[in-house]
Length: 194
Image 1 (tube, rainbow, N blue to C red):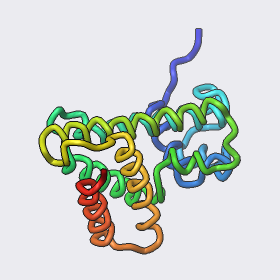
Image 2: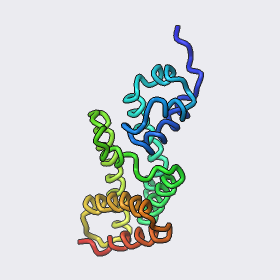
Image 3: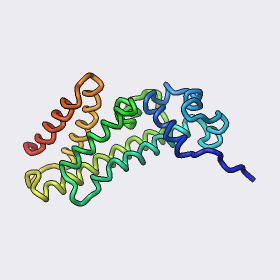
């Protein structure tokens, strides 16, 4: 009979997620994960299989956390204000954790990540965010926040680009006020889009 786990797996996964988020897959060692989680190497292997298994679980956990931030976007009344708050909230979380950018985007740019399951998680998760933006834009359009006609998919891709570009803006020295102003300008530009 297997012994029950003597640690909180979700808590360990949250700690491992932050390490991977900050350092990437290749930049994170098992020793880093042992130190961050406070678990022994064997406990990590028993729970997650190997480093790749733990990374996959950490990406899935990141997606769960992102879903919590996206809750305001799920409202049938969500519009541009909710998109703005979502973006600023995720930037605050990146700042708080000193992670620098979206974990999905960082993973997409990491040449050491070759695992097909990871690539699938990244692509699917990014698609979900763009779909959320498109849905909220369509709602905003129906309520008159945007012109009656427009390509919500293209605008959602634009917002996804802006969202991730704001992380780069912050990491290159822009203040919170400058970031908010850039976001406000991007949202205002939606009114001009064909």
